[in-house]
Image (tube, one colour):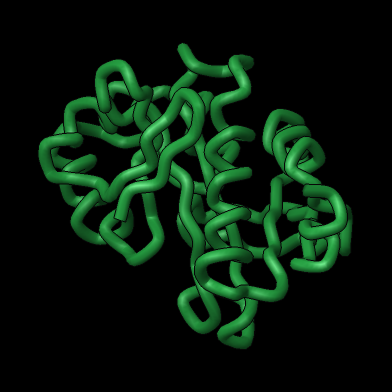
Amino acid sequence: MELFTERLILRPWNKSDAENLYEYAKDDRVGPIAGWPVHTSVENSREIIKSALSAPETYAVCLKDDNRAIGSVGLMIGKQSSLDFTDTEGTIGYWIGVPFWGQGLIPEATREIIRHAFEDLSLETLWCGYFDGNEKSKRVQEKCGFTYHHTNKDIYWQLTDDIRTEHITRLTKEEYLENR
């Protein structure tokens, strides 16, 4: 499935996206603050496309003018999430390459995933999170209507093998419909 916004195409990841993925995911300003390690090679990126980014409802964020993957946005529904959710709840995750920061592209992509989750998939609640220090991610969530719910302090984060504090935000279908 492909989703479209004013400036973006959200489409499934392809193995052929590995070079573009590596170009942006090797930057240590991207992955670690989002909770995943820096990519080490094009082959590493290809493996991550195969093992993680090929999951259902995970999309490459691409500019309409060239369809090149510059980031990712995804939705994990129910038991796919690391949290104990029902099938009417999901979590949203996202990132974008540094050259595209500050252009409003991830809020644009996230708003489309929110629309898709509530209108097409009939979810009732969406959750999102950001780690201490990730003000850019916090701002995306605020722009997209998520509100603070709770904080998990001193949690072990397996992907980066460290201890973190994560702030959790929430958006309900009712709130989405009120503010559309």
